[in-house]
Length: 161
Image 1 (cartoon, rainbow, N blue to C red):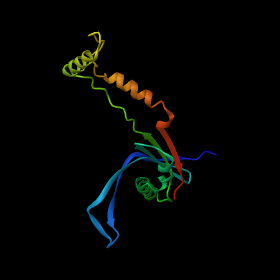
Image 2 (image 1 turned 135 degrees about the vertical axis):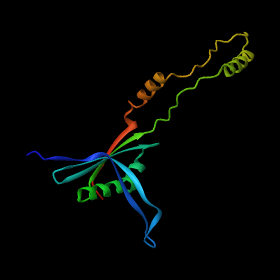
Image 3 (image 1 turned 45 degrees about the horizontal axis):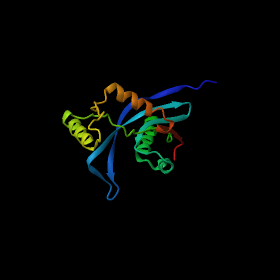
Image 4 (image 1 turned 90 degrees about the vertical axis):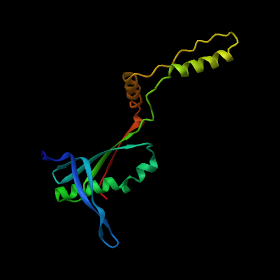
């Protein structure tokens, strides 16, 4: 038996009030806009997909994931959108690469480094070459190589709290 899939939409923006529980008044900003990645319904089951980035991804972070306020708010939005119980969520985490594009060195920096190497040299010679800036293509290739590491991507599925 095939179950009908209904999309709740991708990149849907929603807005909700910011309420100070004591004494139950709206915050001066009054509302907070947000955007969910995607939501959908299959039969009687509801799902939320969210993409996140993290500087570091470890067991402690994943264990505390159920307390993630952003996912909780998005699940609430999806449940209101579909007039349903809280959905299951699938979160994709991408670890932020700590790579930076090499800027190379200026002619002045090169000459200073070269002079220092020559001063230390016993022969009075050096094979020093100027460090050139990394091209965009070279950096993209290095970044792509970094993201082939399976530890840089993680998917976590959870049911509603």
